[in-house]
Image (cartoon, rainbow, N blue to C red; front, side):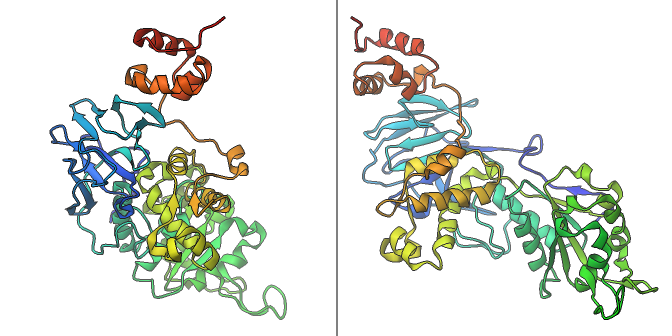
Length: 466
């Protein structure tokens, strides 16, 4: 390991230039076989595959070093040719040929191009997400049950999750100090615990402290400890955080909140573990590894202290691993109800946690289009709200407190009228008594005039003025 700071690939910067990308679909929901959620169908090199009973889409469980083929989605409610996929060099186009209605990003459609991040729904039977993925890293040393948490507790089958696991495995085996960055709620403390547990120091207890709770006036005593009777008679001797972490790992959360003078006093500790207890004249040494976490701009850290952290780990925000959300939903709900027998009976068939909770397409679409500011922590809060308002054991909606404070983002702009089926548009018009004003809004068009042109072109029936 060199003395230069090492940065890993991070989702917000994208893959290295020239790295191959696989285009395809990821299963977000499939009630017929919920265990297949998270499977990915790579479209590269495919010749116009078909989704349907006995279809030709190449579904598989993509894991490092292997792809386990799983076959077509043989739901009896799917037509034999439900969705025709046309793969071109510059785009992917889908056309609905079956009996189940097609919705793209929540809007009815028949034939349309799709782009990364789009949500495709076939009735209430299958929900897919258009995904672009990098090739997976080399085979992991330990495989985990599909969709379940690994030994460190990380859940996800997306390429972002598997690359992140590889990153944690690499960093855990190194003895240098680590700076963990990422937005609030993304799991920085989880990363610190995983790095410690998987390291050679894992048999010792992890020493943790939020740096934001260390007053500047007491920082030396908190960090370095004191001898007996100092500074006041009768004061017991304390090892301080540095001494307590001897042989182990010291995790300092909210590291960017440390005042700069306190940061300066950590320089020698970061270099070779040297520190001095209050009331002592001789220096001590602690064999420790420091893991620091912050969601602040790195410019808030003293540049020379920042340089002591040879490795930086960026925790991916939830938006960069949306393919993992359905798996996270199941994991978080199981964790929520683990000690609550009443909720288990209410949300799981026969109270069996391995059966999986029932989550509606409407709620799942909402969770997949949410604007996440506190990431996994926010997702768990949304699930608590859905659990509180669940009806007949189905999680279908959020409570009014969440509806008012958290609005979903839109995955794309106004719907292209060329993607709409005239039969579906006529059905929407009929439902609104021929009124165009509510109809164009429901269809997701940009204005009433766009609908009026569509009506004229296809000779649809509308309510006449008079």
